[in-house]
Length: 159
Length: 304
Ligand SMILES: Cc1cc2nc3c(=O)[nH]c(=O)nc-3n(C[C@H](O)[C@H](O)[C@H](O)COP(=O)(O)OP(=O)(O)OC[C@H]3O[C@@H](n4cnc5c(N)ncnc54)[C@H](O)[C@@H]3O)c2cc1C
Ligand code: FES
Ligand code: FES
Image (tube, rainbow over all chains, first blue to last red; front, side):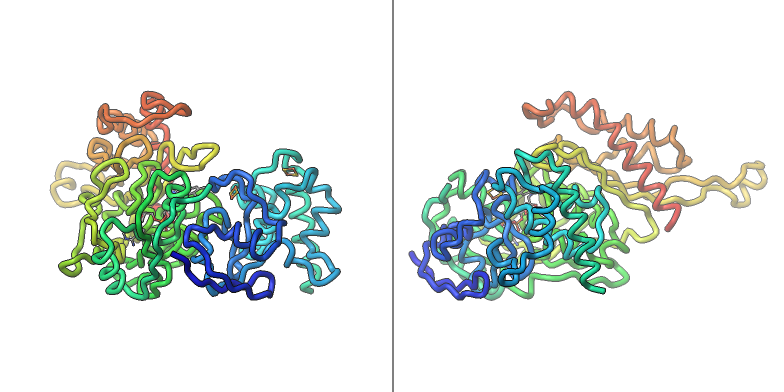
């Protein structure tokens, strides 16, 4: 059985007939041809597949493409405004919040979710908010710094 | 990992979900998918058909009246954790929902799926057992109410039948009592190794004319204690021994310590363990978590 789905990925509408068992992460990587979204664990533990579905974070390895039918999906490739990086991307760069970069797309979108629900989190809240994302390189210190920095930059931009 | 192939149907209403269930014996309902999709991917489940109930609007949302809360089965953990009505009437439920997994899990996982999946390491069954919730189930013969104490029947087993759909959860208001949920999280998965939910009232005893004649002072005591434990038992367990050791006793550290120790008797020998924490280990630390939950609930009861 194939099912028609229409998913907007970073503003581009993609229509396909898919097997219902197709995961959203594969829809993104194969049909949208965007490979920023990673598959790390494939068991909903590591967060490297995190995307935004209608603005809210979700693990795309634990979401079927059919569940996102009609939705607006944003991946790491859709975060920058043209050439201008998102403050989170800037701060991960500036604060060395990444080494190999594998966890980074998920880490940045999980950070986006955190700042959506709490604009000025404490370090403790940042750690709690990123609980679902694993990084095997950085030891997390610089990731926390990066998120703190981005929160400040975004608050300053609001004013 | 790919699930085995299945047919996919999307239900627009509870009635339509019922028709689809009847037409496709053995089909699985899909809500948030955060228990079912992992099982499908591991091929621990391979249903011929999956019926997506995730878009049924009538199953979503939280409403409150003087009696308590009505929570639609499709309400997400994130919505419950953020709800002012839940915080007012059943603070422990919001507290438990906020500790499930991580933010992305809470954005998609639903209370109905959490209960129907009946994982002994889940958080919400334990809280609802302590709060005395009633579950509304739509089945072949219409709607029925099931007491939370009769809903869970064993590890990942419930009294839901093949054609049943959980529609709502009614939670009596615990406003006036203090409630708390304290959890020993598995460090990797964050599921409950031990979870303890408490609802506790603080009232007075004595002060009537008999006490006056006898010269006995009015005392502050624990009332209406409800304590449930999960994580280390096949299904959430009401701890009658702990409850009995609380009611009519002064809300003190001594009382809470003695009551918490009684959990060992309530637990019995049918304990769950894994490579991370054996059943015996969990039983040994359970009183610590019971005592913490009692202290937290008593503090909130004082403020209520
Ligand atoms: C990484 C991770 C960490 C987690 N950590 C925790 C945790 O710490 N604590 C915790 O409690 N849970 C945890 N969970 C589980 C999570 O809470 C799930 O969301 C929840 O158990 C299932 O809800 P769902 O809506 O996703 O259900 P689904 O996966 O869609 O369904 C689960 C089961 O329930 C059935 N079902 C769903 N809705 C209904 C209904 N309305 N009527 C009848 N049957 C129904 C389905 O057929 C299926 O069998 C975790 C999950 C993940 C992936
Ligand atoms: S790949 Fe999705 S959580 Fe790890
Ligand atoms: S930067 Fe390598 S896993 Fe995080």
